[in-house]
Amino acid sequence: MHPYLSRRNFLAQSGTGLGGIALAHLLGRERALGATGPIRPQINPANPNAQRPTHFPARANRVIMIFCSGAVSQVDTFDYKPELIKRHGQPMPGAEGLVTFQGAQGNLNKSPWEFRPRGQSGKMVSELVPHLGALADEMCFIHSLTGKTNTHGPGENFMATGFTLDGFPSMGAWTTYALGSENDTLPAYVAIPDPRGVPQSAGNFWGPGFLPAAFQGTDFNATQPLRNLARPSEFSPATDRATREFIATLNRHHLERFPDDSELAARISSYELAARMQLSVPEVADISSEPAHILKLYGADQAGNPVKDLKAAYARHCILARRLVEKGVRFVQLFNGAYQTGGEGVSNWDGHKSLQPQYVKHGEVMDQPTAALLADLKQRGLLADTLVVWCTEFGRMPTFQKGASGRDHNPNGFTAWLAGAGVKKGFSFGATDEFGYKAVENVATVYDFHATILDILGLNHERLSFYHNGIERRLTDVHGHVIRDVLS
Image (cartoon, rainbow, N blue to C red):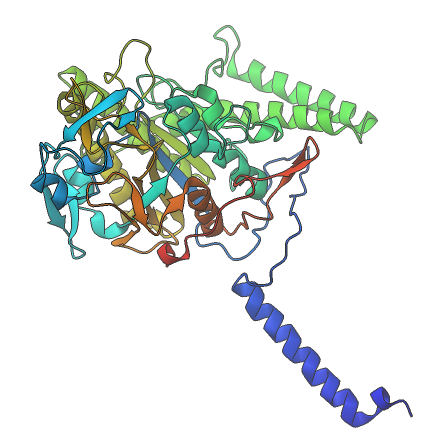
């Protein structure tokens, strides 16, 4: 008899095999199997936003990404530096003759706002953002982010897509390409531009790049839902419905004649989604049904001067973001601040010349509505499976520019925070130096930031790919490590 056919060897080999299966399961659960091959989702052109499985169990099912355009100063918001206060008005040691984006630097300058400890964690947060400070125990701060550029447009591209150049898919496009949507009457990916306009990188921030166009973000807001969506006034609802039903019949017959034409199937799918959105978008964007206490919580009931009007508009956008994730929209991008030619500091966080007067306004607009969004998500149970991301394109210098009372661009160390599903609460990761100039502890890149967000969504950033122009492309290029210290 062959030795492998004996009863003893059969039982021994079976036991070893079962142990191997168990080990593979454990390693897979811990994402330690080391598989390197690409994972390209199978897309049905007739239903490109159908739900697709994660690579491993996800901590979060959807994302709200709040992007503050113009580069928020970390040392005036969330990165407390006692040494900066102590050495206020002195030259920064080792930085003699330092020239940054807009020129030579002056002396160290403490924040105009006091910092104080918040919550059980005792996190030091600036009085510029008191409402967000009150929720510090819900947040996971990353204080050691670094970028690749000190220019706004490329910096926005880098935070959005992982590349400084135009033409690459945004984080939301990668997410919906991988996972699809939980809703078939709304876009899988929605971008809500600031009431003042769009960021400097404009539509590239929510564009699909080389991914199929179905995965681009759809931009609309609570004031102006999708353009060209309403039924023409000369058509009655019955006529409109009959017309759509007739077109659907023609499309179905046309598709039956060309069953292998994926582009035709994709076009028909997009038209059908547009038809469904005629009903769903106005409904979800109409916040008039929200109770008075919710409008007050967000600050959407305020008015009377330009800042309060702007705050109320941004607050309505925050409410819209919550309503969208309630409906199962996979990725919502919410913008605070916009690019405006000739309006430096007026419409975004680009505080070069006079930081304090500008930031007083921007803090007022951003703080309460953003904090209310976080609190509202929590009280509705949505924060349990929603990841909230707050970020900006880079940071600011701890010095003031020579001849000005504002801070220059600084990609060497800045702050972002996460909240909700998958991350530790009241936790801080990494650190900048004693002045807030450079990341020095647990230095992290934007690639690491992206890898961590994808991991929370159950996606392996090294394997999620799209074959384009002879290259297996991915959000993190050939870089990035998951910041496991921030994961719950």
